[in-house]
Length: 361
Image 1 (tube, rainbow, N blue to C red):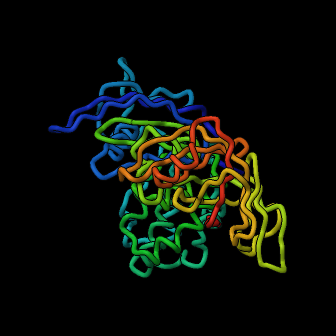
Image 2: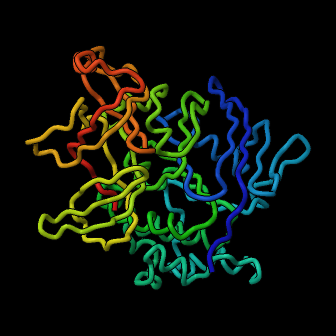
Image 3: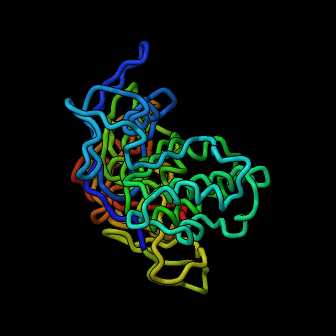
């Protein structure tokens, strides 16, 4: 049994906290992981708390066919079928892991349970720790247990407020594969607050870019990451994330061919089978452009592309160029001198040379 999908999510909220004002109007997908992304103080957590009913704002909150708030009603948090995972795992210290995850599960009527204990245990990889108490777990293990406990309340939506921010690097690396597996398994929507580009690249399907209490943009991850009118473009690790599938293994060179929408690319062999779906992360600084296909080069991934848009970068000597390879957008960072010499302009056909690509397994 798997968690059932809901319809879309509507979040219209306006509230003031001192000098800070949150004012958002969002329509989000009813499935997949939506990342609320932005710097500290941008309003991400406040937005999540409004959705949960932990903070009362003016507006309208709807999840699927359930209206949780509008001008005539305000459903209190304990009556909203949601699960909330905080930065710190709040487990019952006197209970074992099994007792912790069963706590909410036993309070849900049998005919309303959408996720079973065995499923949550498998998804989060906590089977070997069921008899332990929280003080015998690492930070990453405690957070995995907290997520399992939240899911076993069979929520209509899962809210996650920077669940990895309190973990050290090793714990983050430990928990990430479980979050990726969870992302693939769940059919309920997940709203995930983060300021980490790595978490965004690994997990997000939809991106809401937050700044100063407003949503600057909301849309599919790949398209939104490559927009030149957004501040995310000037980040050092600006680039694109492409969903792809392994279609060929080239054993002699320990490479795989990965097909994405509109093209294909060679990458290091991650040891995954042909047919496996993966994500590719290509940074803007790792692509160069040429007017003709280059020969006699160490660069293996050279593909035709079309210039869509040119924009300013954070340094006056640099530019960002949005290109499209097939139907997939990419970002290119290059000098203004290079752009001038190549006479780049929208609609021009070029060759994109991808110097490096990272596989997000």
